Image (tube, rainbow, N blue to C red; front, top):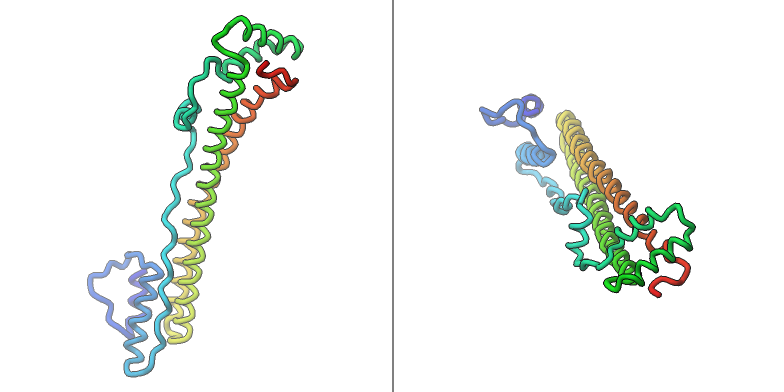
Length: 234
């Protein structure tokens, strides 16, 4: 692009020797060069002030946490060990699936009565704590996706604004820079495509992880369903 830039501007200003013809030139580079060129052409005249600098886009959002081990999630959330975990109860309930639900519940309560180390209330509390921990991670995943969406919007808005300023200045000041204007538009399109690609990767990752976490939340909610006749904790 630098070689083309030399040809487009060579009649007005000398391009430094040694510049690589394959060097990439950003919108800001093109805009700065256009301002410098126009200042030289209009020396002695009242040139319009350059447009105000755009605010920088927000910093990159943190990557979406994915694939975390549930035990690590619970530990990070401070979920204490339970004398009888929700997962253990789910395994027992799976083994009693062939029995009528009221008989299966009675069997679990019988186990509770025979072992004074735990109660049904311990199991329900463990399930509630783990659901809360997973919900917290789920919210963090949603927040990461929202931040990525906001960053994408800010990047596109900034690029659109820079591109519009460059286009207006080139059209107004000198028709011979039409080729430079077109190239600036192409550069912005490439940067938009890159930003969109990054957003899509973040969005897909966030949605997949949110779905995975929801599956586990739904599975843990089965603990409450198991004791839903009002006898839980008795």
